[in-house]
Length: 210
Image (cartoon, rainbow, N blue to C red):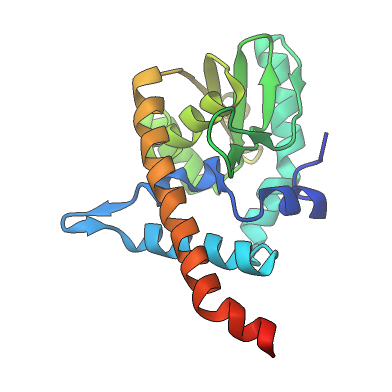
């Protein structure tokens, strides 16, 4: 298994559609596709042409969240009475240049997606009582890539009172949603490759000549 967050993990994801960016791929406005989709397309084009993953800023709260994930996983395991098997990047079984990196496999049919957000965000999740919308598509894509039937969304904040630290909401696999997202992914990946091919045709011979 390639450990998440390592250089090898970033390399295997380079230029591919991943679960954490599905919402960006599907971003729309009232008049058409949103800026997030266009920016994501440009990022994947750049990754394919350069072979390097775009650097992303890691803020102190994000770093704290990553450092807290192991604790969150342990608390979740104790709560549900099952172990979580960590996993690396899983390629989509039918769509090239796409995949997902779930936070873990649970039993024979489940996944877990762990978030360790700031306290205000965690409280908002507790009050809402369900998975924030932006993560639902991410989890469906993870199920599409792994063949799993459900995914537990976990929000964890150790700074909260003990009874409010862990939030778990299970999302069942929806094949209809997955089919819709897969269709969009195929179109999007085609657009990415079309731009790569266009640039290669236009400038590839010039670079070779130099």
